[in-house]
Length: 71
Image 1: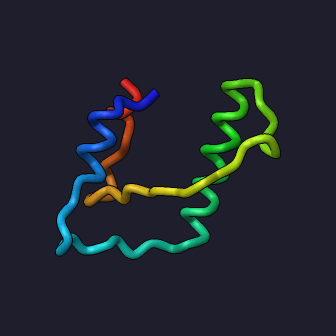
Image 2: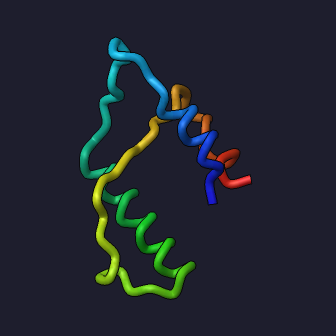
């Protein structure tokens, strides 16, 4: 599971912080994949899960990743 402090540090921003332009379809696909993986891990059916919101943190550089969140 991600470390909550690290997640909160990543989403911390200021009113003048620019939003990242992302393809909506990519975010939707990644969101659904996350739900599927979570369900698999917790032996739960996808239809039993309600997604309330989705947050995608786009790396500043392409080679960046979120692996450190899961360590």
